[in-house]
Image (cartoon, rainbow, N blue to C red; front, side):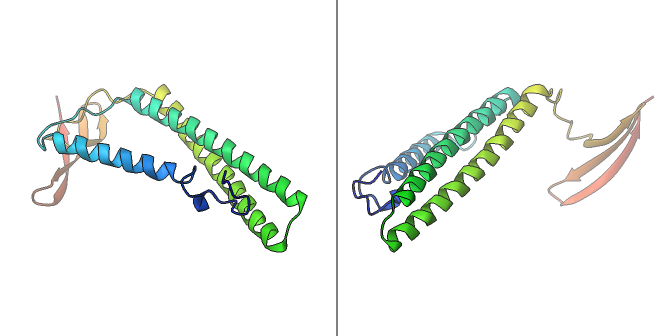
Length: 167
């Protein structure tokens, strides 16, 4: 919250809570650039498993719930200020801020629901057994030894359908 009550928006605060997210984002971006600069271009980094993506999705959902809670508290504080009265300009500013906080609450709860649902889906469903063989292509249909596959050649920018049968 700003030291100056006449400026309810966090972005108007100088050196307070409004400046911290930009500093953190800058520090994270600088760290990522340093990390990427030290990794050789030919290094193959392993892909995370489905469980790791599920953990990440569930953690993101938890973060969104926390953000919606903060936005809801902010909207309640604005409602209390509006009920206390003030000049017409202050009331208009506080009403705008309250509407913005209410919309943020709704958006964060929607994102949280989607992230949690994605996390549960990734956690509960089995992953693929193995990656498809690039020579055989991506199987569209595999039924009783007959395989219909989509085969692509990125060098020539072509795609073809291959029908194969194993006896």
